[in-house]
Length: 141
Image 1 (cartoon, rainbow, N blue to C red):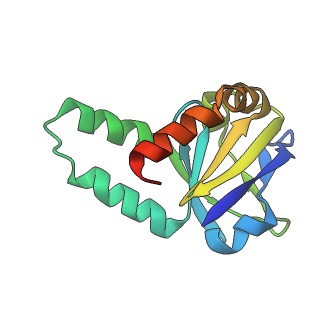
Image 2: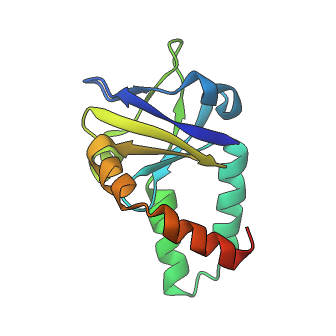
């Protein structure tokens, strides 16, 4: 399980150091894709295959299903860690997530999210702990 928050920078070539705590669970090769809310997702290969299997089960005759597949599969790439624990984030994905230099890498259970520092600060500022507590109570958590 991935958890924690880490601040990093992307170098001029588009490489990002993956936090050491995440590397063992990711393996040397994994998938970076467009995420939701303006971030990127990282999935290890097992979780990615589970996700893709669910997408493939959706009826291709439904417009929403086709859009999901285009968004996530068309906006994904296999990446490999280098010897220094860095991964090259494709330019198209960096642009999609407005990632320039400063990023926040967070673990959220079965995946990792990569946020531009600016976007993450906006999201983090909007988190309301009292509202979360109320929703958790409604869900029985």
